Length: 285
Image 1 (cartoon, helix red, strand yellow):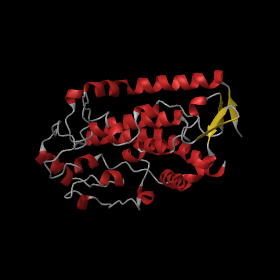
Image 2 (cartoon, one colour; image 1 turned 90 degrees about the horizontal axis):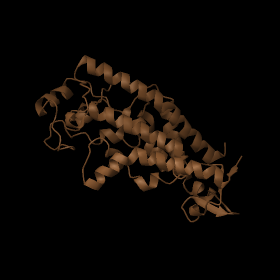
Image 3 (cartoon, helix red, strand yellow; image 1 turned 120 degrees about the vertical axis):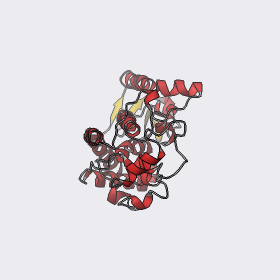
Image 4 (cartoon, rainbow, N blue to C red; image 1 turned 30 degrees about the vertical axis):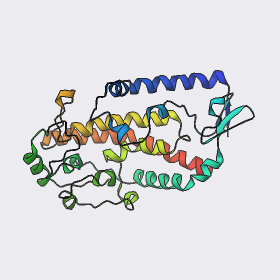
């Protein structure tokens, strides 16, 4: 069932979306103008390829056409005819393999029991036995030798390939799993910070089909998860106002696992919305 919105209906929605984006990105854009790097908040724009100006474009989602929305004419993924803009079914068909893969991954993840015992050691494994730090402007909170001992004294159990691939060569054999891109649908689980952060990635890959409200909900979740990710990392970010989550201690582990559970609860409905979106695109349900 499709709905056609008149300009006085969709224009306020578009304007509210732009305001929300501008509020979310104000700090990042200001730092970018000053040429300042930020190890926490820059991540969503360095690791993920979606640019701020892309986020500002409002997408209503499938089943909705926009009367008089001439600015969508010529945009990839849209058709403009009979004085209205709507999603292009041909673009959905062209990208059906990608949409199917995303749906299968997210469905498998949603159906798997979440795990909460990794304690964010992936970030520690990325600096294990190496002088080359990804965030070299920031010191290690415990120093190099003590950081290595934390890795060696814990069970490293990272299930996420895109975190594991940044492990140092010395750290990879210590991981109880050896994730690959091919095994990703078999290993990802809803307790993993990076799997939940990546909901934003999958929402961007479903643009312009994904409603922008869902996209920004995933963005906000990813931003909040990234904050925990770096607070629990071996880096000392106190000068940026980030209190560490000391996962090398029992109290830190408990704090981390509790936050993981909260993020898993936030992520689950978003993951299911993305699965339903894929089903709607592929099967019209």
